[in-house]
Each structure stands twice: as C-alpha cells, then as structure tokens.
Image 1 (spheres, rainbow, N blue to C red):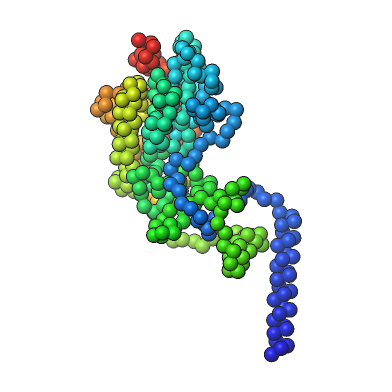
Image 2 (image 1 turned 90 degrees about the vertical axis):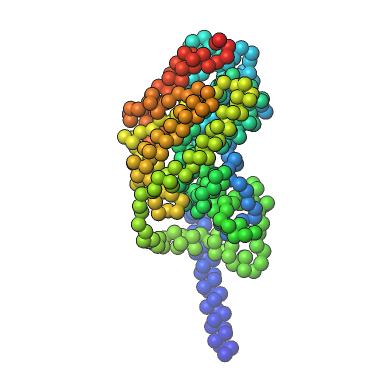
Length: 379
C-alpha cells in the first residue's frame, strides 16, 4: 500500500511539474494578441447595457463640460461663439461620420456660420437620441436638431445571439450593441434570468470579486492556463444541426412600435423647447456589399431565423414610412433621404454611405435647410 501511494505521489508530482514546465515555456514565448476581456465565470454586478458607451477621448472629442465626450466642428469653445447657427446631429454610425462636418462646411460656403454638435455614435438608436436630446439641448441650445435613425432600431428586433439576450425587450436592454466587445451574457444572481454583465478589467481589475477558496484557485489555474486555453481552442467546435428559415413579418417589425414611440417623444420634446427639428429617413441598398444580410449572419435572437432580402427591404421601407407619417402627424419637417439616395455605388454596405454618398447626403440636407428656411435666423 505504501509503495502504491509513493508511486502515485511521484507520478502526480512529476505530472504537475511537467504541466508547470509546459505552461512556463508557453508563457515565455507567447505574445498576447489582445488585452484580457471579461469572463462569464464571475458576475460581480449587473448593469443595464443601454447607455454605457462613449467616444474615446482624442483631439477630435470635446473636453468642454458643456458637451463633454462628443465631437464638434469647430471645436469648443470656439463652436459656442455668438452668431453661429448651432446644429445638433442625433443618430447612429450613419451620423458619426463625415456628413455632419460636410453640412457645416457647405453652410459656411453659403455665408451661414455654423457649429455641428455631433452626438451620433455607432449602434445607437432612437432611444439614445431621445436621451441625448433631453440631456444636451438645454446646454447646447441648438438652432436646429437633425435626426437620422432607422437601422439600429430595426436591428434590435432580431439581433444575433452573440449580441443579444433570448427575449426581446422594448427598452432594448436585451441588446449589448456598441458594448459587445466587453459585455457578455450571463445569468442574474437573484432570479437566474438572462442578463448582460461587465467585469472590471485593466486598472479596475482589483474591484472585481474573487473566489479565494481552494476550488476557486484550481478553477483559476484551469481557465488562465495558456496550455489549457490552447488545447481548448485547438479542439474542433461541436457542430449544431439547425435549420435556418426566413422570419415572419411580425418578427421583422418587432421594434417598429418602440421606434415610433421614441421618435414621437423626441419630436414633442424638441417642440416643447421651441427647437426646430428635421427628421431624415435612412437610405438603404440591396446592391452593395453585405454586412447585415446573409451570409453575414443577420439572425433573430433565437439564432434560427434569417432576414432575407425581401424582409430587409420591407423593414427599411416601413421604418422610413413611419418617419414620413410622423412628420405629417406632428407637423415636423422630414427629408426622405431614402428617395434622394438610391445609387448602389454610393453605399459601402446596405446602409453606410461612401464618401461620395455622404457628400450627396450633406448637399441634400443643406439644400433643404436653405429652401425651407429651417434655421431660425434665416427668416
């Protein structure tokens, strides 16, 4: 019995030393490709993922407390100079681009000094725009608000499981959106419902909770071991047999009521403040590169249904028609950009415009601003 125990002991020790030697060797010659990300193993707290995103600070982003964290053209404080027309741009990635800068430049060519306050951000949608209007307009005091929304609300109705929780929620908290690199899905500790979580990393890592038990130590070794991670990544992925089918119309348009409600609230909020507002419909194309449509993996959040070309076209058309109808209902200006920009050569993908497309969009907007006298001081 003693001999067997000794044999077991020496075997275990030698195996452990071998594993440690392999781990040490791998770490000596390993160059990390990217910083560590959050882990689903430890959920120290839960947050609503909706509003937790902003631009990284740079020379192009304002540090002025009146519009902190957002790009302006010209930069603040010069943008607040008297005599400048202040235009607040709201939207997603189709606003967080060159076109607001082009609008400002084109207005300057017409002797209309202007400042572009650009509050558009990748993946943001109508609910973000409503929030930003309520947050910034009293300080910025814009002379005109320009809103371009559509695709990101549309997308939230049936997003990929990689970015979404299983159930659709009208406040869009089922969707990680711009936070997807570091927000992950897990289970809420209280009731085990699906939830997104973020774990403190980098200089905030010390704030995360830790399992200091013996089992926790072994789990940490297993998860953090470069050898184990390498073996895990080398293993062939398990194939899941599933049949992908096209979505029904109700699923395609699932987010449309929330979009209409948010846009209506936004328009009414601007009216209460006496701020002129113009809504733009979103151009789209099916003749461009594919980012959202199959085979890119634009599925419902059940992972089983596909958005086909007919569904995408129908959905974008219905969202655009909703904006046009809102203009009639609320007596607010609408520019139907989806009728203005139709050439597939002007699109990078289904909705993002090339530089030439953004220039055409900016020229169309400036033309209508001047024709309709949308800036108060033109009157």
